[in-house]
Structures are given as C-alpha cells and as structure tokens.
Length: 144
Image 1 (cartoon, rainbow, N blue to C red):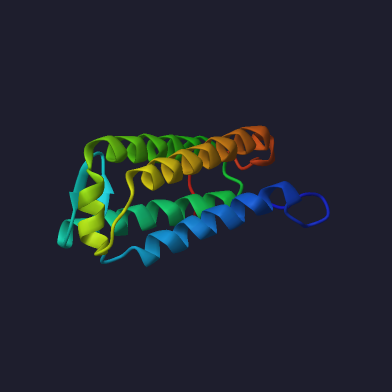
Image 2 (spheres, rainbow, N blue to C red):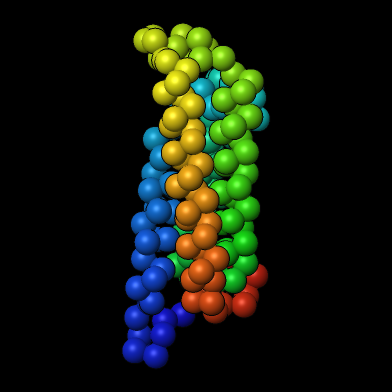
C-alpha cells in the first residue's frame, strides 16, 4: 500500500500520529471512570467501554496505516460521535461530579473551554481527513 517509490504519502503521517495518540489516550484511561452520553460509568462497565474504545482506536490506526477507504468514513464518524459525546457529557454531568472524582475543584468554565477546543480540533482533523481521502486507495473492507 505504498506509492510508486515504496513510501507512504507524507500527508498520512499526521493521521498516523493523531490516531496513535488517541490509542495511547484510550489505553491510559483504563481503570478510570468513563463518561459516555451523559452518564459517568465506573468499575467493570467503564473498563469494558475503555476496552471497546481501545479496539476501535486500534482498528482506525491500522486502517490509516493500510490506507483503507472505509477508514476515512469511520474516522470522520468516530470524531463526530466524540464531539457529540463531549457536549452531551458537558450538559448532563455536573462539574461537581468531575470535581468529586478528581478531589479538586473543576471550574465549569474550564470544562467548557476544553470541550470547545477539543471540538474545534476534531472538526479540523475531519476536514484534513476529508482533504486527504484520495490517499486512501485500499478498497478492501478487511484489514487482514
């Protein structure tokens, strides 16, 4: 899946780095509470959510490395779901709950600004993915 001279296009390396970083964030959140669509899950269910999120992130990373066409749309959908999840969590989970879990005060303004910045970053990432979508030239729906 490399171009004529045996190398991956340079335009895909930012996506490789970002999806690798996302995978590392998933792994590092194992054992922590998992906020999903306005509910803060803890314990075993949170671990299962993190495990599923890690598997999805690993699949997306492998899809980027193999330049799979389906990965373009899965990445865009995953990022849009992540944006929706962040805003639903912000509106339904009170800042006091995050503060209780962190054992320190969490200002609501900081939650709002970090959610806004993360949303902007994911929208920009989606625009970049859409821009380089033609680099994904592997039509197979299977990674292996």
